[in-house]
Image (tube, rainbow over all chains, first blue to last red; front, side, top):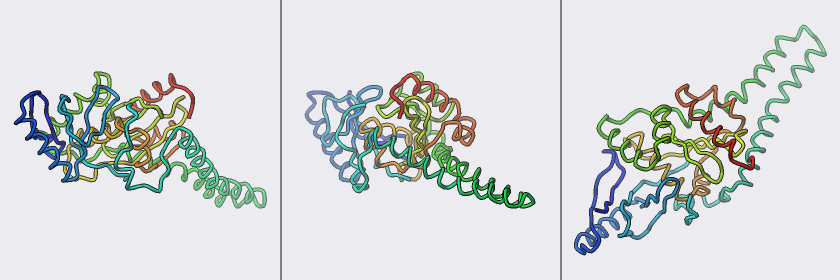
Length: 74
Length: 217
């Protein structure tokens, strides 16, 4: 089961879950993904230790997609 | 780390040249030269006064104290990037810690539990990621950079703040070093005595890892 999560004040929130081939769940996940990007979040796919990939489209084959807030120099 | 496209946050600092090993070396040298330029006049003044009139030694001592304090103040500013911030409630902290634990290996998890910093090897050196910034131990372990960078979002649990920085770092290391503000660059020993005691083993581990890397930055 793949997941779309958002890091927030609760620790993280599970926004969507989908399995390959479940078109309805995938569609909901894509819609939620776009909503979060419009709200200013960035999406990252962790690709194991030391590697991560910033994505602009929901990679439906990913196990876990994490939404993060922008960072800034302090 | 993946050679991903630029971190989107770099657009907010478009005037900065993108960080790379050569630029980091230059910034480190410039930082050292600036510190020398700030301290040498005080030392020279103290020597000059003493040679003119030995009884002026109290003024000379004050000048020497200034020469000593300036690098210490820089190091103190650098150490602020790894100072712990106020904690969120226990529940969110626990959830966030679980996610962070999934992103890193066993050794990094253990070091984070002991020190509050997550080690991460990169192409620019060994990073130690905290809640409000990161230390970068250059290859060779003889210089450390303190980067002030954070998520400007109140109320996030500590582990989530680290996870934000870690994911951004992994996505684009050079972009991360471009977005972050340099707070200090210098010898690790100068920083070590200024950072919280809890964080020192992380710096020591970072230096050890950086010593097996090459070449020196």
